[in-house]
Image (cartoon, rainbow, N blue to C red):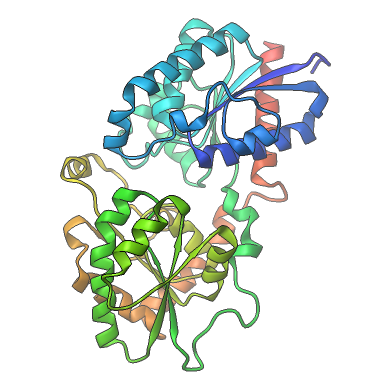
Length: 391
């Protein structure tokens, strides 16, 4: 590779992508040299700290939920056009898009159409393995290489006709020391209160739909459990007030904690969990916390269930290729069914042992060797750059 400075455009669409982008930027600087790289694109505070001046504030497009996206659609469409125009004008050596496919993939399509010589790497696969599998072959038209966070995704894209895909590892595997308990941190075998995590989601819509059945399930558990239990809710800042307000109606009063340090401390102590579907199920599995997973969506979104192809909505089940974690979705998400599923996790039952045995396989399934995920991602980006320069 020549010594000419490399122009790297990175476009993310929300906070999680900003965090991934910042780690990738650090890894690229370590690999190629900070003085040989010029970063531009769209990002948040984490990417800004690594030297990226964002084209516009990430908050312009970082919206979640169907109704929120519709409300902000004119702004989002303008930002897609602005970003694509800027990439084409800059003619960078590479464009890296990170997650948020409703935004980043539209940018990539526009860039590929107008500047097909710019290589494009996609960091984080859309869930083509769950629904709308037809997206995978369409991605081949504008994605040169896909960096996957989940170990089953390369095979899914191969089967569906998607772009070349490499499993680079989930960022959680870099944080196992924070997630997993140290000696004496976990275990209520001494007869003390059971420590139950309740995780109603990180979106207002999730919190609004799950807090009531979760609270009523806790009331039933209080009546049925042979031992007392304590409830902790790790809350993200933008939904903390809503969680606190809705928890006022609960008969079982939870401890609500904020911040990553407090969240991981609660994970390390927990004996069981009741959680909304999402990345948190991977966090719980890697931490070794048996769980029950629940989810409710709007009536409009419920129609999408007919398009879902995956055997589970729980990421940990998908990684394990085995449905060991109970999932109670939509009309099955009732207080009675939730309580019935959680109660066996409070003691040494076959249901609890089955989950714990399965979680012990996760390290091998998610292992990537000596590289950190961001380091492997940076290596693949360098390989794509090298291949493009040889072409």
